[in-house]
Image (cartoon, rainbow, N blue to C red; front, side, top):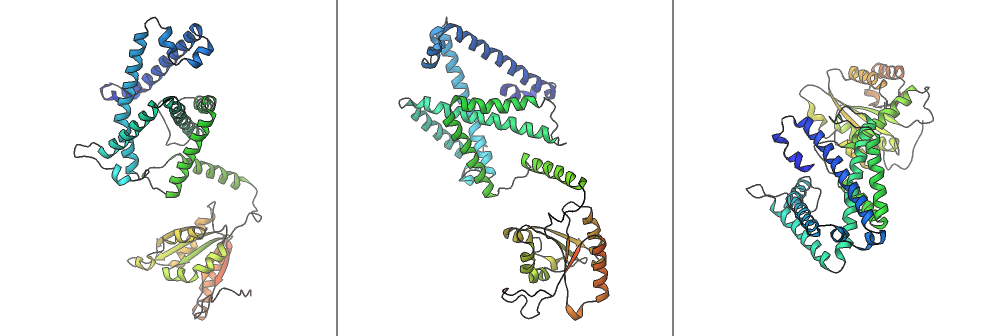
Length: 394
């Protein structure tokens, strides 16, 4: 398969030839493996197959030919690993996935990843030394088999998820039934635990630990993965089901605040109060309005997404250029009405005697027309929220 892919540049129609060649290679390999399994079952007993690791050499008409084939396959696999492993390690280092990424991402002027080559070579030498000690090679083989099988299981699982989600971005030329990746996923996992249950468990735990470690590092990549598509598909399904249900979400009500501001300072003053209202499962939608050429007044406002996030509150910030902020706010409320995760409380900071009652009443009436409640916030100009120990409800 890999040989055919590497020669794709010489093919007349690689888009058709590569899938056909891949399937042909799989079929031929399957036939050969099944034929070998049948032959060994005829020429050797089950006890011999379990205890004798060179049974094919002993039973073949030309044992030396089998040994030559074993050496050729071993050297071929070793060369492929020596060439491919450093490139893979370098690619992972370029995305800061592995420790000492800055070192392993380096390469020579000729484009050779020398630090990665030295690291993978050292790992190979240590593995060989361990394999030469007693029964070390037979101890390593099951573990390596587990990682290969878990790779196949993950690949089949990803293909199955992509097919189930039906996203337009996943449109492979070679289309296969969903049953194929499902059988591949179940077969790979079953073979793992059938061969070596303990090593299978170790391999699965190792993969989960690595995944969680990478999640905690919050790495950013220039591409999306199957998780974003999966969560988007689930969210879309849930949203459609919820919108089609009879209205009346009082039981599932959570504070979802729409906070219009015209400066970052205004939000900073009411931040603690917003946090207290939105906790523990609420959300905050910040609408920042600015006049043309005066956006600097909202500098730092987008950072509040992370600030609220650190408090366990989902927050989103939208900046809008406007000449009449009241009109923009009314339009925003109308737009949010058709959204699934729409705000249900309009949070307004008022200035007491300096506030225009007519303007304020107009905004409140418009919020009521869009089924949005209103929270008027007026703090003490000197002490603000004070020590936040006493709450007076009017």
